[in-house]
Length: 129
Figure 1 (tube, rainbow, N blue to C red):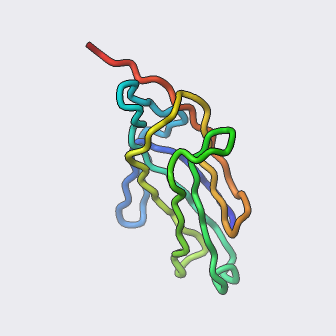
Figure 2: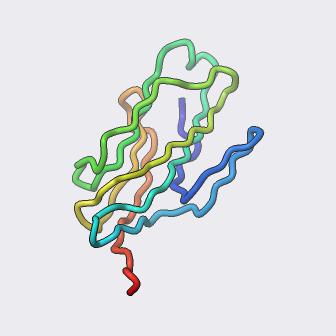
Figure 3: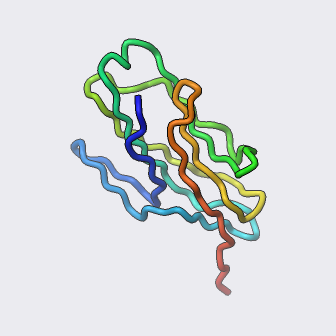
C-alpha cells in the first residue's frame, strides 16, 4: 500500500467519483488572539495491489512540529474501499490550536511505517482593524 498523493487544501469536493481540490496550500494562518489555525482538509490518494487488502491495515495521520510534538490527536482509520486498487481519502482538519508560528509536518503512517510527509508552515495571520 503506497501513498500516491498527499495535499493540504482549503476545501475539497467530491461528486460522481471526481475530486475537486481548491486552494492547495503549504502555509496555514493562525489567529494571533486565539492561536486557532485556519480550517483545512488533507487529501490522500492510496494505491495498492489487491493482495494488500487481504489483511487489515492501519493508517495514522499526525500533525506534528519538527520536534515530533503532536499539534492534535492523530487521525486513525482502518477502513479502506475494497472495490478498486486505489482510494481517495478526505480528512477535514478543524479546531486546531498552535503553540507558535513555526514549521510543522503532516505525516502519514501505514502499519507503523512512515509513508509520506508534507511540510506545513504556520504563520501569524494579519488582523485587519
